[in-house]
Length: 513
Image 1 (spheres, one colour):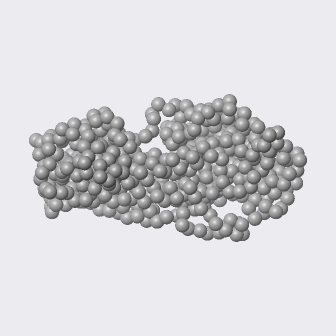
Image 2 (image 1 turned 30 degrees about the vertical axis):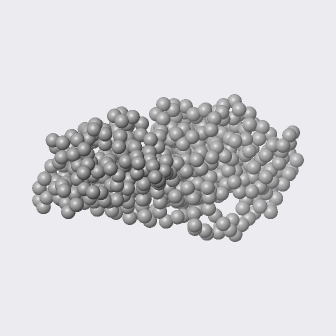
């Protein structure tokens, strides 16, 4: 899914995509602003300055936050109010978020405030962009958010020269990190502290990264699932276009065509085409289940890309002719993303469920027609026995992550926020689940590659041959028991970085999605 050619993302002229977010967050693409972006930010800021001068009552500008919204703040205290919100809200705890996640959140903060409805200064956004471009990554503990606020506050403190940040491979005080990168701290203006912590920025960044990886995993699952079918003497009859045509879900048909393309010219598949009347569901039902999963992922892309290009602030500074108005509501609610993230978890888990079942069939000599646990001398050697245990354990974790977070509710802020989306927990679960899914697919990949070699001299398909060659370049065949953890790590990295998919597509062309 990711376009490796994205080296610079210009914000302001076109809609931001998940590919662009991944380019910035994971691969270090540069961020620049268009002239239109700068103009709309400056215009929005001029309205905030006007509201402040006229002493209009606006939430978070001339009032306190949350249940303190009825407490009026004097104009001379407006800037102090913005610093205080960052310091008081930086309360998340535990292990820090991964650097790519923090970078994704920084980008989403820019997108949220840069729509022209937040009233922030262009200088503040320029500093956020400079931090991205120069590699200043704030330290943000990853636990303790119901949707937003805390994570964003930790990130925003670095703008002031406070908090902590990574730079040059070191974790430094925020002021030292900025100085080392040649970036000056920001002096916050009115409204900016609130805008920095408001919105679905952390929720969206986590879910977008998870969605990208989930899509790549689903496409790779077509390749690995085809390899397993080949190794297990499965029949390709279940992928017949006529069968798919009478249940015309587009993703089902695309998946069936993918599987047939991957297995084209396989001597193994051709030899065993009529080996049994029909296969177990984990083999013959790949078009149906993989297809349903892909549809769920595609739905998530649509929702997320709307969210990525939205203003999720509160209040909204809305321009009207020569003036403007502050609109108080709650575009910061995380339900859109939270519900999609919960669906992502469920879809990833059912994809993993089928992968684990194929792995079990590969090692289970009662059904595989292959050596027990895919090893030449079973008994003396356990072979791939415990890899299947690992897949089962990982699947158990994924089932726990599939419990929806968005149905939860714990009121906050003296019951002013009596409903909370819990979108952050949903998105964080999805990000974690995507890693577990890659592990489970990696285990199936290793099993399938080993199993196919027992069919020699029958040739696998050209696509399978290329994938097996790629695996064997890094991971030798298992002849006797050895330390297997590094093998799983290497195979997982191949899936995560898109190598398995790219190798297969180099033979059969781009697979349908």
